[in-house]
Image 1 (cartoon, rainbow, N blue to C red):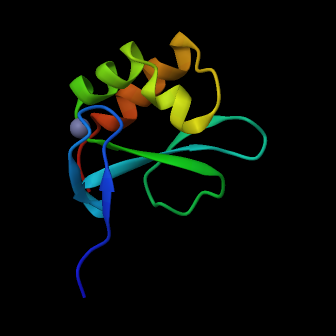
Image 2: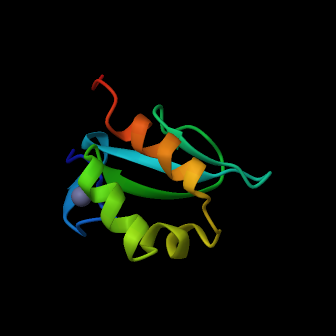
Image 3: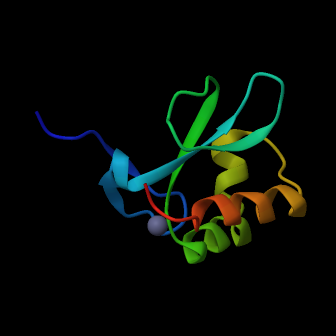
Amino acid sequence: MADPVRMCVGCRAHAPKKELIRIVRTPDGQIVADAKGKTPGRGAYICRKAECLQKARKNRALERMLAASISPETYDALEAAVTEEHG
Ligand SMILES: [Zn+2]
């Protein structure tokens, strides 16, 4: 069976889910990077690249996708998570 494919909110390229990182708005309103893909809540996917997060930050695609406003501190934390060592 093929891997599920998701679209990056930054570059809008499609890629297998496992190559992307999921960003979730949790039920209590936190915006977190979900490395395991198990956190409940509304999610968006993004490539593991700082440039994709920066694009999504600039055009607010991530905020639209999650229907939430995202603080600069949260973006910084997400960028760190996105660019973390793979695996
Ligand atoms: Zn991307």
